[in-house]
Length: 123
Image 1: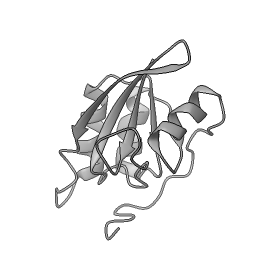
Image 2: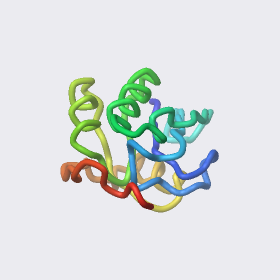
Image 3: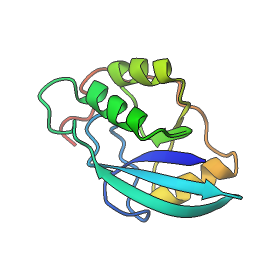
Image 4: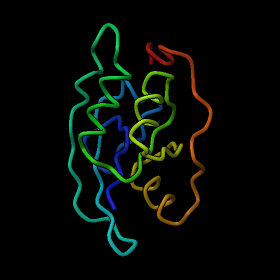
């Protein structure tokens, strides 16, 4: 299973970024038999866009072919793209490693509350 996480940093000990469209990085975490395996990092190409960051980020993550996504919050534009791709999104905070393990253990809730556009731009 591949899980993509919006991250504030480039490694699994970084925090889950509360922002999806404007997070700094996406970490792709491979999970097999309930254990974390390979981890790949991609810089969020949409983070610095004036407009359309959520759409660009969602398309980038879609191209990464995840089975699941973990983030802090999701805006309406990104949500629409991800919903169209059929990828479930889960909400978490704290270290990426802890969030991934919580998802593996079935302790994360699916994200259902969508935040307004441009939420958290000044964070």
